[in-house]
Length: 136
Image 1 (cartoon, rainbow, N blue to C red):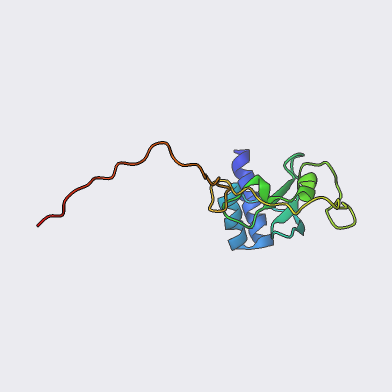
Image 2: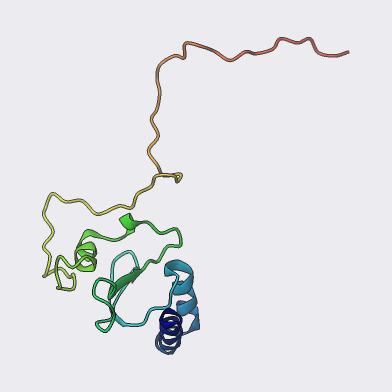
């Protein structure tokens, strides 16, 4: 019964703080309404929240901008914050970026942007092509 009460309390507080549309998006993406303080946004448009009153380990979460979400859509500096490697909110001064590091990219496996090899060898077997006379 307490999980149902937690759901109702979270639903009411989430609607009060964020509104109905953002609460419904949270229910559809992370399966529960959450309430907490908006900590920051990253360059990809993801929103990061924190609720210190929640259970340790479940008090930080992200609402991803894209509907088809993947773990690779979270930048490395925010990944550190999410997994408690650091308590500093990511900014240019807190985490310096090495000169050799490239910008993070999301995993494109299963999409049109996925890597596909290009084959230049001649196939050993060819398809059968029927030779039929046209009908009169």
